[in-house]
Length: 167
Image (cartoon, rainbow, N blue to C red; front, side, top):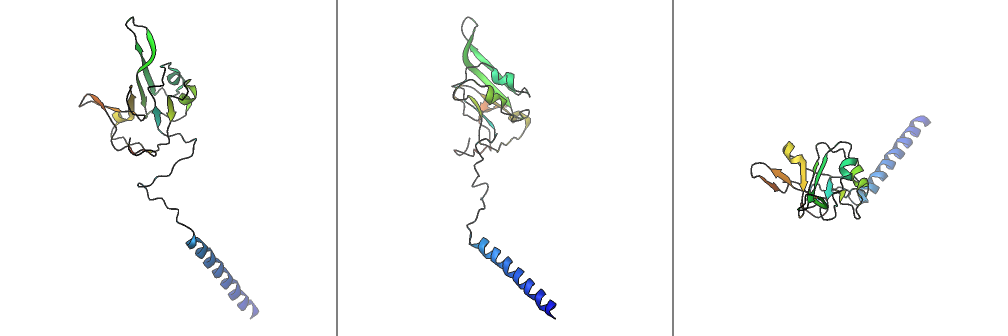
């Protein structure tokens, strides 16, 4: 008979412990993020999409040499005599090949880095052609894609930036 009452006592204590946990959790503020309206900011060392600054680039090519997947291509400007000038003509990254290893960023000698990983973790690609981003002087940090129908560079559609709104 005492075993029966003992088991009832243990079960009641366990139910009260569970109710206490539930009550404490109910009183805490919600931690739900209303995605896609709200986005979490990744930690500082996050390797997101590559961003590029054509203004600071000296077209040395160290980022392309350091890239193990060979997804970076660039060309420097040439003067009237045909000699290379330390200014960038165009720069491209193929995100279909990029493995986000950050070696290009480490190899970049400029301060601040002209190629760097951003905190953006969403990229939208409708086809393979949109995976290659191009940069020239005056292009935005997230680059542009080449539209073969219009034969011009256009801003990528559907790319939402984690910081600063749309690309």
